[in-house]
Amino acid sequence: MKPLASSDFVADRGIAGRIAARLVPAVRATRGFFARRRKLAMAIASILFVGGLAWAVESAGIALAQIEGQWLAAALALGFLGVILNGIELSRCAGALGKKIPAPEAINLSSVGILSNLLPIPASALVRGGALMATGATLAQSGRILLYVGLLRLSVAGAITGLALTSGPLGWPVVAGSCLASAILFALIAQVGGIISALRLLGLRIAMLAGIAIQLWFCFRALGANAGLADAALQSIAPVVGSAVGIVPGGLGVSEAIGAALALLVSGSSAMAFAALALNRLAGYACAGLTVLAFQARKAMGGR
Image (tube, rainbow, N blue to C red; front, side):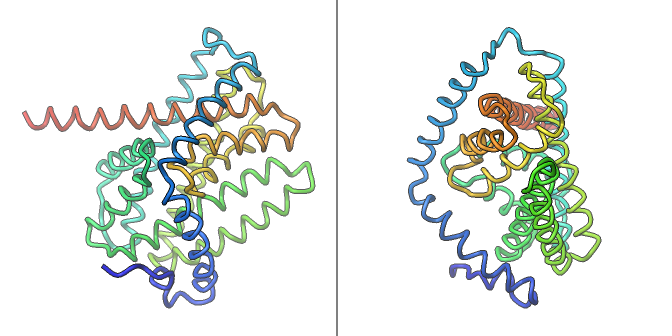
């Protein structure tokens, strides 16, 4: 199989496609550098995550016995909704390519993908891409739609974070830049699968990121922090950027460190931000794991 060129993803896509073509090689080069050292990067990230969490718990004075169960339960409930929306998004990606992945199957595959981020390989992308290719989509088609949707997630998250910063000088420029990027990506997705598919994927991304912001707010409250929705919205971009840079699978430790840095912009607690993002990550893994187990149990019962 020949290596993919950036043109394979954006061929005959007009001006917007040529813009994307300039971004693909830079992203690929950066990720490729770290991919060759992925095991080392994963080890460093694990140390960063565990060490950072220990520092955050100590610095913020968090006691496990004082975690508020009702807020933690709410975060878990929203985590299951996030898992479902992730699966529906994969199903809609297939629909944009004229293929079909039933929603239940897509939810199961997306849950497996979330858990596979624990491996020292980019397994989540492989699971999602493999699922699309199993429907008959080509490697270039699968890579293109996943790239556009992944970047759309980043741009929408940027807009939400920008709105949380509108009291300062950075807020509106971030919102404007993010909205422009979202419009370009919407056009690219529409060229692949039509306006209806683009609208569906944009709506899903907005719903998913709004859910992440609310889930983070629940995590802050579970840890005893008197945080508002604006604080959680500010942090909603951290998991997205941490995953997108691709230095380590799932942005382990990186997302939490980004969140701790973002907290400084509003004179917030870096330790509490790190802890809330870590709790949000663990809740997400728990929800994905339980979803996979539920599908396995269903399969076992159906096989009898």
